[in-house]
Length: 223
Image (cartoon, rainbow, N blue to C red; front, side):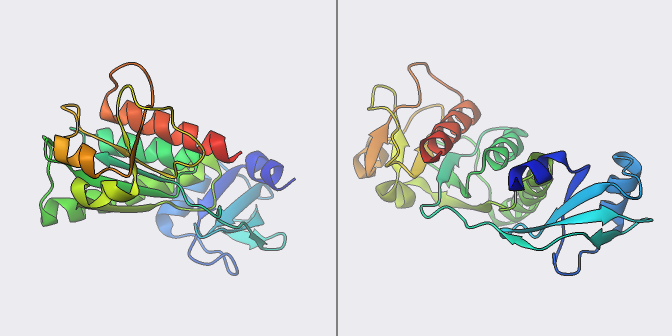
C-alpha cells in the first residue's frame, strides 16, 4: 500500500521537514508550473532521510493529508565506488544509482585514472551530483538520498570492497561494496589490496555501465 501511494501521487517532493512541508520557489515552480499539479491532487513529500508523508496540493502550497511514514534503511547499506569517468558521465551514474536505491556512491582516484578532481573541482562536482541525486530521488519516488562522497584513493577503499574484474566470480549477496576501476584497469597493487574481486559481466564495460550493472545486481540480491 505504501508503495502504491507513492507511485500514484501526482508529484513527489523533497522538503526540509515532513512535519510542516513547505516548498521553496524552485520546488513550487516545478510542481505547479512544470508538472501542472492542480489543487486537490495527491502529492507526497520526503526529507530524504527515510520519512515521507502524503499531502494534498493547495493554491501554490501543500497541506498534510496523512501520517508520517518512517522507512528503515536496509540493515547492510549498499555502496558503489567508481573511478571518475569523463564529461557528464558521473551525473548519469549518480542519477541511475539513486533510482536503483543505492545507499552510498564513492568517487575514486585510481592509479590509472584519467580524470582527477582537485579540491575546488571536487566541491563543485559533488554539489552538482547531490542536486542530481535529489532530482532522481523525486522522480523515482525514493525516500532515502544516497550519500555521495569523494574523491578518495582507490588503494584506501578497495581493501573493504569487492573490486570488479573480468573473469572473477559473479557478484553475490555478500558483496555490499563494489568498486569499479578505470577503463585502463586496476593496477597490480590495487588488485592485490582488494578484499575480493567480482565480475559484473563477460564483456569489457565502460565505467558508467559497470557501475549501474553492479548497482542493479546488488539491489536484486536484497529483494
